[in-house]
Image (cartoon, rainbow, N blue to C red; front, side, top):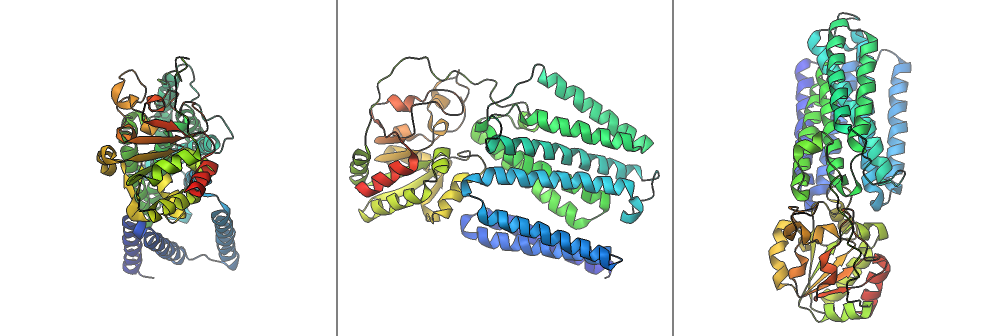
Length: 464
């Protein structure tokens, strides 16, 4: 295959990846975007295999076998995974991307002739820099994603784990990493390569363990960005255009998404990248004072919503845990049959990954034109009769606007308290992940409907 044709095929795969990202920006075109991404990856992988020209039947068998095993595992996981477990699945996949970058870098270092990048002990300096950066970012992505997976899946505490002098430790490790990269480029010794990997693995752990569960949407998008840059670094090492383009697209898209998530949580983008955030400023869950709340039943909630002209539903992670999205759709259908206008309000960081609530609502076949982002619907709450908050907490807390001492102060929130009536569904009056009380619980226009999100929503739908 000529170099011109290879370049053309890699360009086609890059264009398809760009179109895939464009398609994924909207629920209506997301399926088409996925198909384009799959087609682009098929072209990139096929072209790479043809260019590589495996020299034996055994090599071809190993490649085909690896693809078959990996593809089968991926297909089984994709079919069996629950939508509520999607965040930890994404974290697990990110870890595999990081590990792959480390292994490819190691292969390129120990067998440079196979990759046409020189010979052992005489690899160009520029290639060594690219190799070491790809390996370092890949190792950070691997262990960081493993920790994120463990936190999201409940295999370790979701609370921040704050080590003494952790910032100084991170700075010392970063300096040691830079020194090892310099020595690796000068000496081209394996001990320095593995020192880079070991230090990066440790850094990956230390920048994620201080992050609490409430900040996981930012973590997921950040790790997504890291995995892209790791792939791009290895792409430069191997002079593989498709890998460079793909990695740069994923890395830049993840960085932009991280920035959007930071704005949605009032976080510093730089502190996110450096792992210097996540709960150390969290306040107390409350002052212990017993405050009066208005409690209601499913019948009370159904009566209020059925007699409203507009109802806005605000889903949160509690809805995901209870898998209440289908019951919510049934309730909304009952309201629409009664002539009530129904809309859904989505906070950008509701859930445990970017777009988590959108994914769950799409699974329940909620019409896309009924789902609105924070900036599009906040102005409508004063004209809304009833808001049904299901499993959300911090994203509807007015302390973000009213209390400068609050750890969430400055975070954009859904202003549900401005509506006529707030129906607040939670299991209890406990605080959210930010560890602070929510004044909305005690407002005169709030009725708490306590209980499991799915069971309570089913009862409301039945009462309708």
